[in-house]
Length: 445
Ligand SMILES: *Cc1c(COP(=O)(O)O)cnc(C)c1O
Image: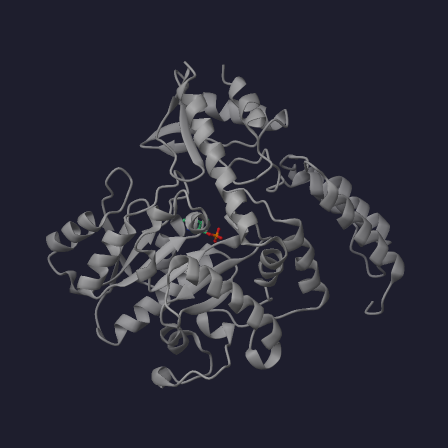
């Protein structure tokens, strides 16, 4: 099973070519458990099954039971829209068994990943020494970064509970992280859903003992509504108080490439750690998140396995081991598909594709504003648009969402906003057009 097999290779390559050339890809549907299990029954046998039969099972039964995140009609959660170059190079990473654990083993891959991390750090305005690694997602990035924040603070505060200041709008992965690392939250009320320096300062001033607050987490921007926190204000308070400043840009960090909104990220250059998910709005395949530290040596002191925790001041050589910057050890060189695509397409193409999603959100907002039975909830800052259909109950939204998917018109799930069920579009696929948006909005008449 390790020898080259021409027929197997052609079968899979042909399938991949078909999938890559679908334009648009079908939206598809959630599967039915019994049906899927029946289809899978008996496919794994002691002697093996003909690859054509297995591939057909996948293509005919399994693939249609996966809603295509890369469909231009996938407008729920955060969609995906990987470039062709990135998808193809992901296959190269697989074919070549490219890992990106250590410099000794994988310097060629790591040098390319680091070139991309440097480009992202430059967009954020982080200093020359900044660096990090690619991890599987924003959740893994937030966890890895806040472990560093905690352990760095532990050197100053050896005993007692520690706390991290977070907005009530922070992503669920932040509260998960705090639970995992056994750190409490100082929940700072947001103003109009935005964490500001002022509200953080007020919360710290009102707290009986703020000395155990060791970090502040800001979001650029929120997943639900695309709201970018007051990064400059939060950074200033963090500086005053000696807090670690973490910026979660898993979704919105890509906006650093968009001149029309770049000013909203002012202050991000002060981040001690910053996360952006290329598998979201930088058009990379799953699973790819960039994690960048202002002072990577602090991360190294925490995450390096098998190394002395006291070796913090050890001077940096040329070697860069991605495994030293997050909780992982073995990792695929998951930054390479993005590297290849950036090199092939150029950064201007990224800027244009991101601006396209922003324009679509603005045009959609204007259309909703001008439609009698629809109400825009707020002007979009990024590419998420929240709106309501006047007179609808939560149930109406859910039934509408199911009808849209059943008709393969769109995958648009309702969301919550200030206790109310509302509709939400998340744009980022350059193939999503105003025609698709109109087609969906027409179903709300
Ligand atoms: C998506 C998202 C995350 C989680 O990222 P995963 O890649 O899904 O782990 C964290 N924070 C924000 C703001 C996000 O949008």
